[in-house]
Amino acid sequence: MQGKPQVRHEPSARGLAPRFEVRLRVNGAERRLRLRPWTTLLDALREYLDLTGTKKGCDHGQCGACTVLIDGRRVLSCLTLAVMKEGAEITTIEGLAAVGELHPLQKAFISHDAFQCGYCTPGQICSAVGLIAEGHTETSDEIRESMSGNICRCGCYPNIVAAIAAVIHGALS
Amino acid sequence: MIDFDYVKARDLGDAVNLIERDPAAKFIAGGTNLIDLMKENVERPTRLIDITGLPLKEVVETQGRGLMIGALVPNSDLAYDERITTRYPLLSSAVLAGASAQLRNMASTGGNLLQRTRCLYFYDITTSCNKREPGSGCGALDGFNRMNAILGWSKSCIAVHPSDMCVALAALEATVHLAGPNGNRTIPFVDFHRLPGDTPEIDTNLAHDEIITAIELPPEEFSRNYSYLKIRDRLSYAFALVSVAAALKIEAGTIKDARIALGGVAHKPWRVPSAEQTLEGQQPRRKTFGEAADVILQGAEGFAHNSFKIELARRAIVRALDQAAAGMPQSQSVKAIV
Image (cartoon, rainbow over all chains, first blue to last red; front, side):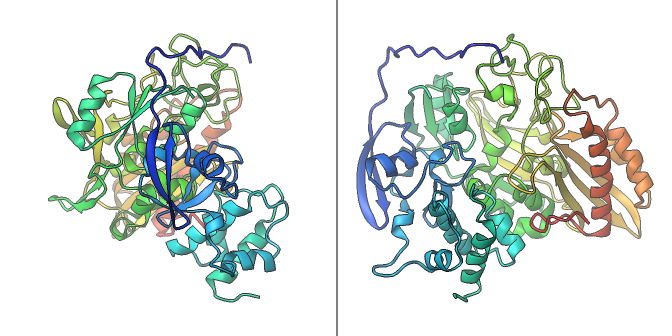
């Protein structure tokens, strides 16, 4: 393909936008940050709060590795501006386990061998937590479809579906 | 992404004031398309006006026994709302056929209408694109155009509108409600999105200083005989090659009313009312459906990588109408097409 990029990066005469004060409740703790508007929630979590469990897979909303829960709903943190989430209740993979005990989905992912390299796994588990909370999903076909926003290069899909099904149907091996 | 300023609108009046004063500003709600386009340097607003605080989040009954859907209702809430699943299941099915669960949780109803094409050349700023930069040419014409249009295109632009929800809204004859500095107005859904013509840089008839406030559904529901059939390269999480929203009103074995809209094939959802009229008074039969499909696809013309869509669309129309007539709508989770 011919052509050169059409964006000229000239410094803007008006100067950079200010930093905005943002209060986020992350895994139950109130965190206050001062962020530029363009800081995604993903970057806020990883770079400002050292919560590196949430992964940057594609940064364009196509892989699901950045999935976190906001007010209990699964969303993509790479397409979320942190400044827009003032006061939100955010749960990351680090926040799922109760003190001293793994979350049932974490246990199921282990017992069902649902991860290999582990890179997609935090996003898979957070997405699955959201899926279960949504309450629309029962069959394996429905789980597969409902998890289609989380991709896995290692191909762990059958075991991921089995792990989620096990938790939904209350039977953990 | 260029640097941009951010402001949160206090109310509808504030939002309209802010956008009116600044031609380089854009509204942001779910951000699922806008932020992606900003990361690609395709969209470069110098200010984002956050409208997520506006009271546009309800689904309410209208006087005419239809429904008014607030522009900020998330796609997932819309798809699972009991009033939608029982009275407008075609719309619910179409929404669930699109994107992923996470994206549907984030995306707003209004934003779904305003999402931009996913044409490779629109997205890639190193290529020619008249939509992105008028006058620069159309790289898709002799490029990789599998995901491009077969209907309604012009030599300036062969992009398609990517939404599934909009195909159902077109079939259901929704109305778009807008607010602007000169007050409120409505646009029939068929007139909201434009054909490219020689102004492909303009996707819709929404003015820059206007905001979508709601989508209104009329009382005709088509809740018994409908199907949203989406054909794509993957079983899920992919845009349509061709999709069909089919809805029939059948009384005593005869079609009284028919709605057929296509996605994935044009710059806007494709409906041909004269084709629908050929079905009125007829019995639901494949041969009749095929004849209607031929009318819908009249003038269809593809390119090097997408001419297969014409026959695919014909078969998908027949299959979707078959499913609708049988009362067996395509499931969006059990992928087999029966």
